[in-house]
Image (cartoon, rainbow, N blue to C red; front, side, top):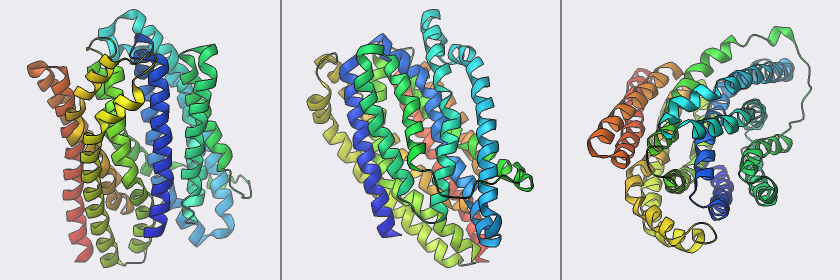
Length: 424
């Protein structure tokens, strides 16, 4: 586990470096202006949806597919192919529906910025919703390799996608301007699919067409994960009330903290789930509990160290790497002044997914989803109270802290309850 986790962490570390380079390129090319504000508002919801699919579909499908391979290996490929076909079609329908809803969604989230801003946001958002079926296919292909405990293939494909994303932005910017970011967002996922196409017998069998077992597991995960990932919506919806350019500053700081803390624990997250699923299946409860405890301690320690280091180093990084072209020294000063607001949320970004893993392994998706929805509701309410009393920026910080740590505390309490039942 440790060796595999280290390799996955290294790959995600390189991928994070590429994403940081992407942030540098975008910031220098566009600066803190209205066009980039519009794109950041438009990409928020599609990014959350893609992230939710990547994070939940694997966790929902892996136990079912793994069980199918163990008990009925002969029909496993048919089961896999049938689910790919049905889920790809279903997700395409959802993408079309979301495209028609892009205008009212933009109005709901960013109504304070006016009609022209909303129209531009909804147009870009509608195109990026077509990343939904692509992300479903990519995740299912990745799950195929995870079930076989080949943990490096899908993270490597995501790394290639991130590199292609940067290259497309640089090459398409002179022709398409801000639309280069929209195009790169979609093609990035398409490229990932090409690198994770598995070798299997594509045979569709109607006996395997029942999606209900997967949907019963997946829908609670989607609800809970969407609630958890809505930190980006909270930041950008609240930040829309700030002057032009602040969505760029907030995005830059939140990305630095979330990527840095998250990438150092992603290896633990990816490797932990298949192993504790196996331990629980074999009734090795003590081994599973010991593994979970170690993973949580390591994740907490790593997140704390990384977040503190980022807070200390980020001012110099912003000054050296981001200032130039259209991103000015004044933009850098404003961005640096926002760093203290994201220290505690940075720790939360690093540990929250690790604390959810035991509940996912036990298939307690519905209780976990309830906790996450309550965390979002509480975080948004606290954020609004602080926003009204102390201003937008304190409202963002307070909302993020409550949203992230309510989920961590709630999931830990729930795990302690189920752990007592297992050990007894």
